[in-house]
Length: 130
Image (cartoon, rainbow, N blue to C red; front, side, top):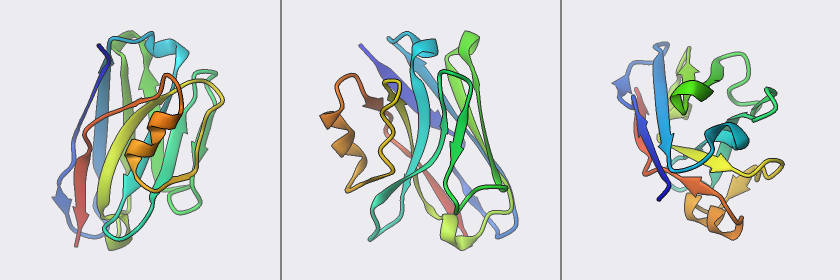
């Protein structure tokens, strides 16, 4: 079965950096767009970044120029390097494997990805910035 496991979440001070990792199994990794979503308490789940299978990337305006997404297809892993963190970045961060061309920007919760056939997501990792 498909499994996505995130790691790297932590508590950091404002201005600091973190690198999140997500390793997938049970799917043809190279065929999927690998996205990072986040959901802060009381807010919708939002697309932060996407390392698409065609090599292109997406960044939300909130993280552009601070975050860098990358993927290693031979390791079935996607990374999110987060720099210059601020308290506004505090959230649970989810990794998601999305079929090509399916890139919802906002969701009520990560579970709403279930409406996309073939989409999968991880359990999330907490990032807290103070």
